[in-house]
Length: 265
Image 1 (cartoon, helix red, strand yellow):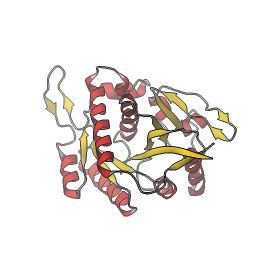
Image 2: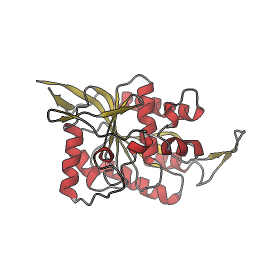
Image 3: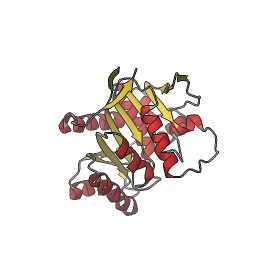
Image 4: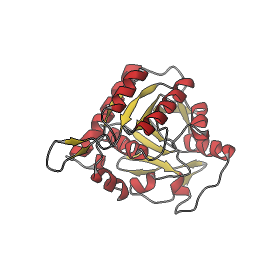
């Protein structure tokens, strides 16, 4: 017997590393859960799985029969290679092994019924991205960038990749957009100003929002206490606004005509 599983798969990608993609994915997932949605987070960055550290959980998942039971933190169901291969031991895998683990994470994990499954992709446009797109009906993709010219050049490549394989672009998120002067509302442009919004406009995709370069966001990730989990913190409100913008984009796209992931009982 089959029952409905995951309603929306949201891929979070970037053209290059170092732009805070996982930070955005983690805080977005928590924000979606805080808005009352059943939410999961799949860490598909198998070579650099940082979700366990950022979500403050380091356990080994249990199995129920042949199905892996996801862990949970801040109201979000989680799966990561970091739970299965803890520590600093590297994975030296080729393409077919990556394909297998992505399949296992999608269909071998007992996700249950979810409104949103956020998928944190590795940077770039390689095997994991193509495997995921070929394996699952992605509802839409978010591309994370910084305002720097180098980051935006790679972000455009990521957008072109998703468009080429017919994945809807939910929009661009500009991370590390500005630095607030302590105690004021004055913004300092560290890597440039407004370039993410201009890129979105020039490429005909939505701009989902700006996220400040804030030490507290970094500290939250390093200590396993993401800012989106903090009630009343304006930094967390930024990610709640992002979550609302993402939900709005999904509502605008409308129901998907392709198959959903089904969970076997």
